[in-house]
Length: 250
Ligand SMILES: [Zn+2]
Image 1: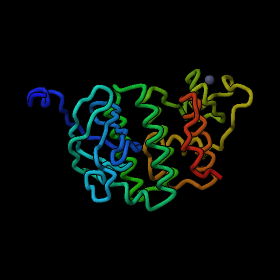
Image 2: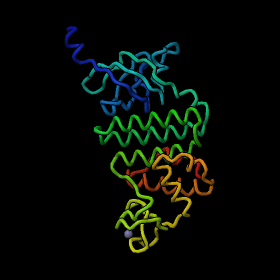
Image 3: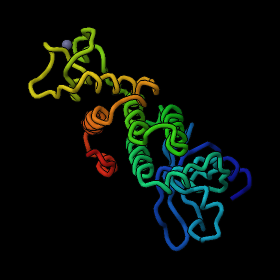
Image 4: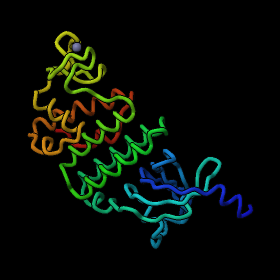
C-alpha cells in the first residue's frame, strides 16, 4: 500500500465509546458514536495489554479525538487523544454506571438505524455523560431526560402538554405511549395510564431541560415518570432496551 492510499483511507473524528468487546489475544472491537461519521465499529490493536494508555482512552464512556483507517468491514483506530474521561467517575458508582450503560445502549440502537443525526446524538450523549460524571443531577433524572431527547432526535418527540393525537391544549390527565404522550379525554384509549399532574410536569421539564423544575421533583413522581419514559422508549424501539431493566425502578 502506498502512502497516498493510506492517507486517502485515513479520517479523523471525535467519538464517544459506546461498548467494547474482545478480539483475539490483545485487541478489542470498539463501537463508537462519532460526531460526523455516525456509528463506527473499529479495531484497536494491543489495547488489552495492561500498560496500554491507548487502551485506557478507548474504554466505555470515554470521549476521544480519533484517527481511523477505513477498513472493508471494520475500521482501525490508529490514534486516540482523550478529550474527556468520564469513565472513571462513572465506573466507580453503580447507579451512574447502569445509567451510562442504558444511555450508550440506547444510543447504539438509535444511531444504528440513522446516521444522519449523529452530531445531535453525539452532543446529547456527551452532555449527559458529563452531567452524570460530575453528579450534576440525580442519575435517574439524567437518564430520563437523555431518553426523551434521544427519541426526539430519532423523530419520536413526545408531547406532555397538548394532546398528542388531536392537539387540544393541555394539561391532560392521561398518557399513551403509542399515541405519543399526553392524550385528552376524547382521544384517550381505554387502559391509558393516568399519571399525577406533577409527573406530567416533570416529564415536560425533563424533555425541555428545565433542570430546576426536574431537580425539585418528589421521588414518587420521579418513579412514575421513569416507568412512563421506559414504556415510551421501549414501545418506539419496538424491542426491549436491556440495560433499562438494570436501573432500579422500585
Ligand atoms: Zn385529543
